[in-house]
Image: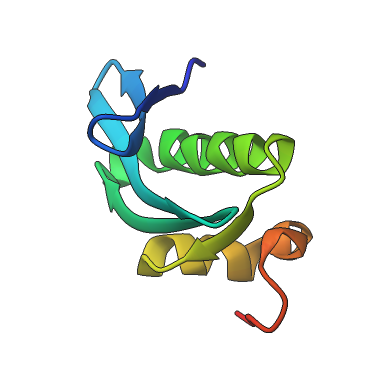
Length: 93
C-alpha cells in the first residue's frame, strides 16, 4: 500500500482497483486537520481504514497532532482508542 501526499491538492491519496481514496488535510502549526474523506463506500471500507491508519502513522512519524473534523474519521478515533494519543491536549472524542 503506497500513500501519496499530494501537496498541491492537500490530500493523501491511495489508488485502489476500485478508484482513488483520499483524505484532505490542512496543516497548521504542527497540527494536521483531517477535513474530508473521499471514496468511502461499503466495498472499499477496509481500504479506507487502511488509508486512515497510514495517514495517522505519517502524523506520528512527523510528530503532528491530529484534529479529525470529518465524521467518518471521528468515528474511526472512537472505535480505535489507541490513536487518541495523537489528539492535541484538550480535544476529546
